[in-house]
Image (cartoon, rainbow, N blue to C red; front, side, top):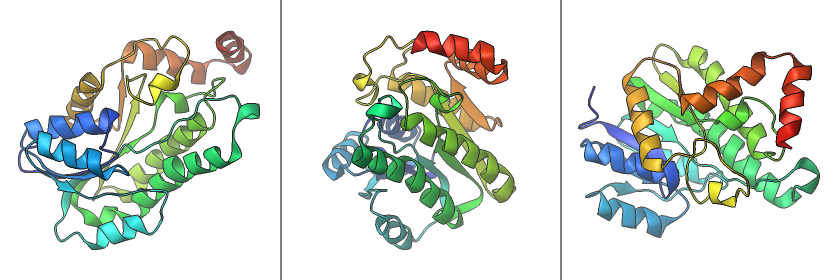
Length: 242
């Protein structure tokens, strides 16, 4: 499967995995629409990859997504939402205002994408939501980011059934990927991956049939194991992390 000529909307394209995905799709000849809050960064990226439609979008501003949708005159082959905020802290240390904004973007913004964009997809088009390995099991220090990602994992599972067969819903759950978000972490990040490699893994997954695209597997499978262990054992392991 090639993405040449495919029309793809990447939401959250200004940095990190989103920007790397834009570069990877452009290298295959896709026709791109790029969205994020940082309009100048999007314009720079669009020039770098040889052209793309730049559509600034802040998922925290609820009126912006409907306006962006109303401006579209052509269906998409894929809509990919990578947009997220990250503010690592233990629950007792969370800043209420920053946490509210994180939930507004990560969860409610993704819900808006899931609710409003499917009519823009051609039959068989892909709606790709970014959850996270952080959503597999509650780990110390990851809230509220991890909670929003757990909700997105669940949302994608629901949508897979609700929108089939017209829309091909996919869930991407990366491990640690080097970015301005993970730069906030003050701990060792196992199996840390560069965004370019993460983008290659995503494209390879979208060419396949699997619902969930997760990587690197030596890390993601270990975290998945926590979900099937008895709670006393799982909690004993996660206390060591804390």
